[in-house]
Length: 302
Image 1 (spheres, rainbow, N blue to C red):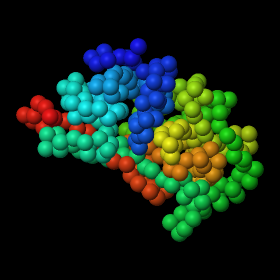
Image 2 (tube, rainbow, N blue to C red):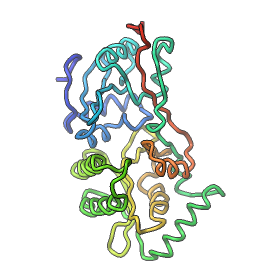
Image 3 (cartoon, rainbow, N blue to C red):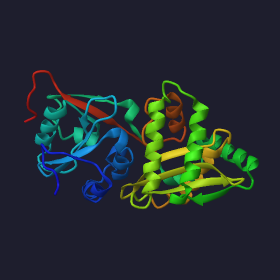
Image 4 (cartoon, one colour):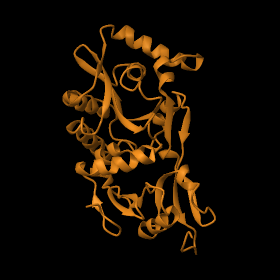
């Protein structure tokens, strides 16, 4: 039986068919509204859901943070639903412009969360690397081809779990512990990867990788976000294999992700190097996200 507000239910694997049903009708554009993401990060996000006015409402309580709601999934009584969410947690976060347009802006404070914005690309653009603005990417691919002439592209499935974990450990070790790569982030990412590969097929995951000399040099996995967009949940490369990332994206966009017109690289989390990298692939669109609260003195959105 589905939970009705004020009751909540923690998100488990068995809840995904119900959540996916509502998300499929909604056709979201942002990566938080992915059933796969909701599950693989559940140890860190501590997500729960309820229904308000027949809308699916997802509450997130990140480790070390206060709880917030994502945008309601549905079309009924949206201002009233948002008002109840705001009274429950004080804020909605990571919401799209799609929701923002439905709310009275004279009654809310909204600010853009730059570090949470998603990067959207044309899949065919990454598969081809055409034009002068992709000269650097093509040069990286040539370098990888020269260094690893025996490399092969492979479809990633559940059997790659040990190789994927080994590559992730190597990738993280090269970064050591910094402000952006803390032990908490390491634990959260590792557990999310384990969740992904423990339930690879149930989560509808697809992906590709590069093998050379019997080792996995790079991989990416993703899942359907909407009818024409795949969201890439993870991508890691061997830090000692220059050009692996650029080669992997080109091949994966020709193979695993080719049936989708667009690919979402998700957020940069405010990490300077990650932001620079994602911008270097020339996004077609940056999908903005916002956090909203009621303005001081405002008690209702109606």
